[in-house]
Image 1 (cartoon, rainbow, N blue to C red):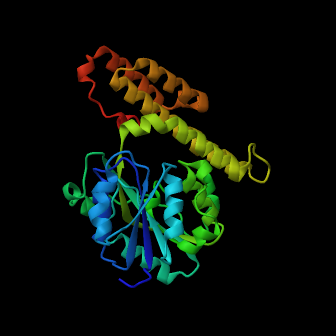
Image 2 (tube, rainbow, N blue to C red):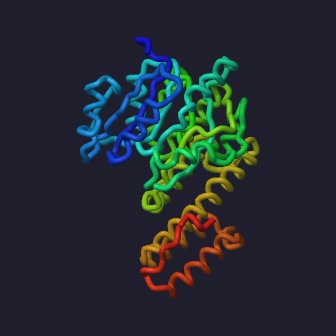
Image 3 (cartoon, rainbow, N blue to C red):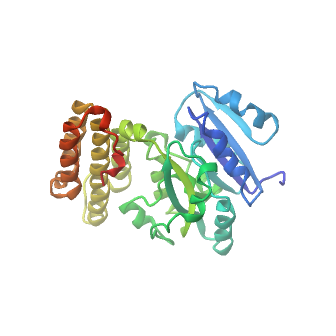
Length: 327
């Protein structure tokens, strides 16, 4: 590696001591080698420091610590320490395909006006690991069609990037914008994409860029917060109410945000049904209908209703059904 790396990889670490080494290893396994790895321990209460000490002592990573301030603050801390021309963010329980950095850098070489390159993400079970999913890296289906070029209007309508781990970004562009908006923690990445799209072009390649872990418990617990910060992001960029100038974008984003989170609240409600907490399930169901009453006319609502009814008839020990089945 050169003294000044081309790419800075930033990994916030918090309560994932069992997964963070896999995330780091996926960076070390990259076919592209000119990078630095910055791990920011965001006040993790477990033994993350001890787990990472051998890598830090060997100089394989730059290890930083701070009091717990949240993932967006940890990303900003890493960004302030980064030296690379490009910056990549990776969550501490996800991992990359081995050619991720190589092909994304290749896209930048062909387009000087590009500020962000992204591929698609593939969800894996929370207990998965790169070692047990080597075949999946070769067999993953093609991803969705996503926009390239001047994409701000497209991203105002919806967020096409599930995780910052899918992206590679020009560091100076992020620095110019002041990094992540910590007041929008949870939707801070979506807010950043909208702002970045004002500075230059995005390039999308239909190629896997990330394997991310799906945590059912986390999704159920965080759905209300995620809905709130996504609405705040919408308000920040489109205003509270639609105007003749932005009415089309505002309504499209309402459909994306409220309609999309209608499904997320139903999934969270189904998880509570499986756990046997029917009171929590009712609260989440009512919230789903409150934010998107049109959900009454959607098939997924009645699918949830029927599944809930039959789950209520089954013994609790038999309710071993994947809440992601609600779609």
